[in-house]
Amino acid sequence: MTEEVKPDPKQAVTQEAQLAAERIASGEEKAPAVDTEGDYEASKQYSVSDVDKTGAGEAAAAAATAPHFKVSEPQETTTVSGSDANPDDYREMAKDINPQASQSGNVSDDLVKKAIEKGQPGK
Image 1 (cartoon, rainbow, N blue to C red):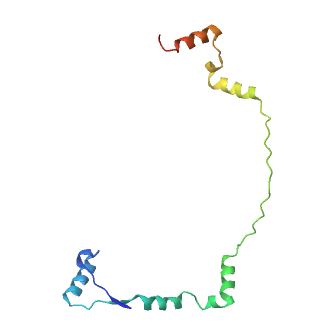
Image 2 (image 1 turned 180 degrees about the vertical axis):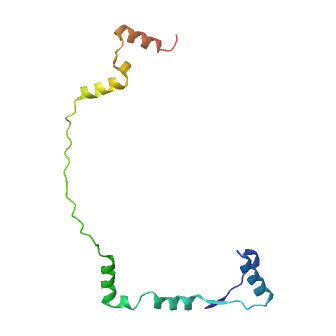
Image 3 (image 1 turned 90 degrees about the vertical axis):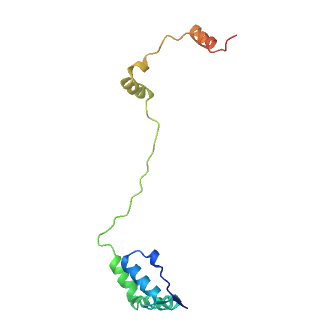
């Protein structure tokens, strides 16, 4: 099916396109006809080359994409994680970072009771 192109000079992107659209609108130039279905059918002929229709195309593709260097096979490794860490080591690291955090305050039962009482709403 042939379609006729109807260009709009206001929608032209370039000056050349605008001038061409104005000439087509005024009748100075003939509007080009576009046969999309015919173009699509013709494009099918070019979608597969003659080489690809034979085994030579596959061989040429394999030769072009073949690696030039030997690729070694990956080796599987196993990783065993165990808990052989000493918690005291981490405490020592924490003391190095913040020495005041390692000092424990004088927290007694009386002090905790006082804090609980102060946290209660007023009577």
